[in-house]
Amino acid sequence: MRLYVDVDETLVFWDNAERPFQGEYTVNKPLVKVLKQGIDSGEYDVTIWSAGGGWWADEISKNLFDGYNLPASGKHELYHHIPDNAYAIDDRLVMDRFYLYKFVKVFLPEEFVEYADRRR
View 1 (cartoon, rainbow, N blue to C red):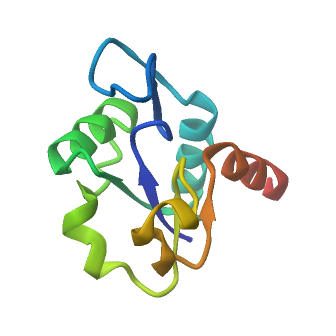
View 2: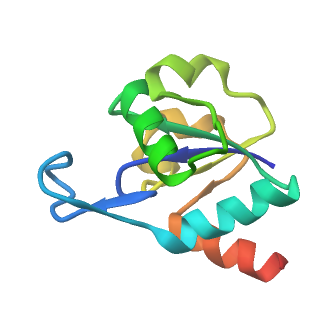
View 3: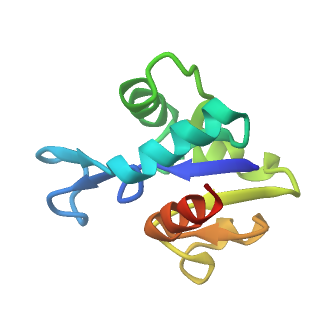
């Protein structure tokens, strides 16, 4: 499963979602755990992406998935290169974000954790 995983309010949560990058973030440990399990089993091919830019996606990728060497990019850079069979994990659904319409399905973070747990 080809997955594009959003950063803010998906992989990490800010104290104030309206003001990301201010204060500390907490990690969405259940999501990170199921993603690592899926990567380790060869079930998931994961790209970390962020509207905050490629540098931010890369920073989070290195912090949360150290040693996995996952691709990371800004959403604007990847927008026109999303393959037809890709899925997304994002805190916003398709109707909230125009760029998500290209995906087969968009999972909310907690929805994907439940989906992954059911498959195990």
